[in-house]
Image (cartoon, rainbow, N blue to C red):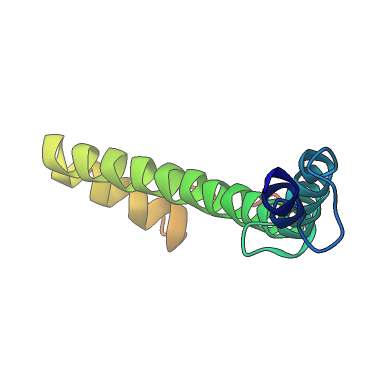
Length: 106
């Protein structure tokens, strides 16, 4: 009777001592598959990191622009006439009588 039980413990010709090895190989296969071909594979993570860096650069540029606009708004609120005169002189190249404008090439 013991031989009958022992014979049933045999899994498809594999001895019970080789089952941990088969389990290890199966786990290793699935790990490698997920590492290279899964939805969060190494390649996808690298792509995501590149996109994150691009978005962070865009965010920094937008923050700089926002800071400049806030500074202009602050200047406008403090002294409206002086700021409007500054804008007219810089952007529209207007001048007062008897005043010369010197333009530099950028």
